[in-house]
Amino acid sequence: QVRLVESGGGLVQAGGSLRLSCAASGRTSSSYAMGWFRQAQGKEREFVAAIDWRGSNTYYAGSVKDRFTISRDHAKNTVYLQMNSLKPEDTAVYHCAADPDGLGYGREPSETRGSWGQGTQVTVSS
Image (cartoon, rainbow, N blue to C red; front, side, top):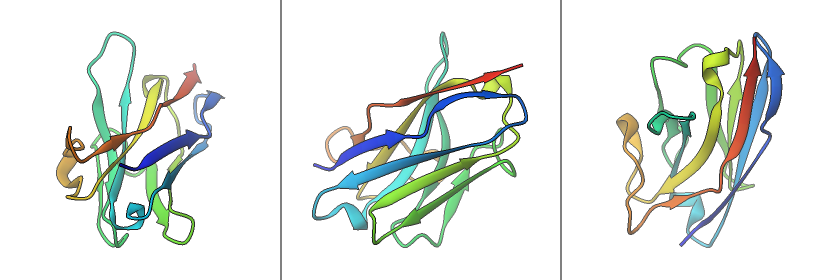
């Protein structure tokens, strides 16, 4: 329904920063809530951050609050995740997600109406 393509992952030292981008394509993509989830090896996928379609409301997991910032550019149909003060425990595959019904409070995208990106690897060395 909406195609999501992430970029910006890579290897960074602890304390460093990265900015992830997720470009959405599709006629209705601008009205989708968008967010980020991550999954580390051997662990369950977890919520990271989300932003509503207007870009006025944001949500963060407690583990990234005050370190990560989610934002979006409607003109470019792109959502960003600025990650600062990165820690080794932030190492994971980060997936962009979109859902027309919202992703507030850590809600995962609908299996029928939501979309997932392919993921981008973020590795933080100690």
